[in-house]
Length: 187
Length: 436
Image (cartoon, rainbow over all chains, first blue to last red; front, top):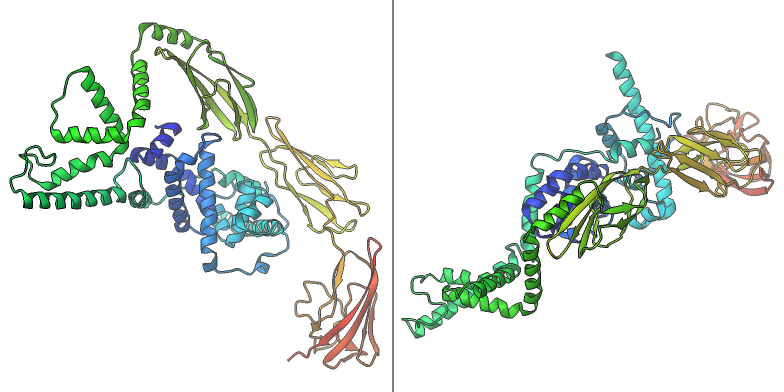
């Protein structure tokens, strides 16, 4: 197994073996990131491909400070944002009110109840704007102000989209839980 | 576990296998894009252009020389007696351009070989090629020679050097650290104790490295990292040692107040906890009360602005805090009325409504927040008072003395006070619409 540094240096020289090694070591992780920003796997792989091309061509920009994996993730996230902007006009706009619903009683979920496929699917069902904000805030840990700048929206929009996204996810997960519970009971 | 934590934990580091054909397609795209970029070490469109150009030039040259002198002069650099094929000459001519950087190395190493050994009787074409690149890279040569000299030095392994290296291996470390474990982001100062050396290389285990003698490094992601220090001396001596650093995850204290625009003191406030990597919590509600529950519910006695803070602690004792200042400054008090409604034609409903039961807008009623006292009056256009209510839960159902009023415009007037004591007065008109 090649070390990160060998991979980085190899990729900087466009060495095919280092490029393949980078792919082998990080593609699964990066697709995990991209899939969070996509409606389905096909879209996620589009983003992943663009991310890898950016990584291969811009690996010299990696300063060596901070974790390499963190840098890769950042490239993928930025690519996902670009992809989102590019595809915005083609998207089917979902009426926001559809997602404004009363908070359901349960706000807490047990660990390991949902598979990661289910979590990805539920996330994929959100309107893409919600999904962007939710990912950037909840999973990536950016601040609303930063998200607002990245997405070119208002800070308050980011905040309200985040809380709506959260409410929508909560509701979808609750529904899924009921389905799973009753399914489990029949067995 | 909150939605946020659930996603962060389950998908933050999730991995997904790409489809089977994905890598092939990626490499295909990569090759295509690399071809369109100028990458010195790869054959690309610029080289192709150069080759074509050179080919055309050479072709023209040969065409003109062969047409002027069919036999060709023996001293001509392009005419080789046994390779009449022009293509061969093309490649020979182009090669110094094609691998510009490599040729520097090659030509220099060739050059030094020539100096050390003897005069090489290469064919004439190589000789020309060499001379060309030497001119182009005159400046670069000095540096390259240096590095070659250095490399040569490193390769010579003296027996003394090896002995020293072994003595370092047996236990002694080359460096000290300000700490070996801590909460992320963990800043560590490294101290190089290796004695005399000419250069050193720190590898921090997270993909980063440094050539400073005593670097500082910040680990911002939790995990275990093996940090390695290598020191080099010009006489070929080199040594290394390494140590393990543990970075604990830093919890994040995050919470949200629900409802977002709470009415104090009416509402029970739920504190939704979105903290991550935390096991213990301490809430301060700003009114003197505290709690250690995961998601506490709190009721405030009177309206005011409170600073609410949460400290979240992780298993390893790392902590993070978040304070929301003036938590209820967003709370707004308002009362608003619609401008039309459609009464039930089947009889008076009594005007009792709730936001859920009146989806058909059969009752004229306000939406409001933080209203303490309230009086609503409805007048006909002629000024006759036809409805009055002091109860927020009862609106006008469109009936007057048991009779459905005629469709048309009616006037409403409202007065009252909000719970913070602020009075309000307002009036407007509403259209009574006929069902079908």
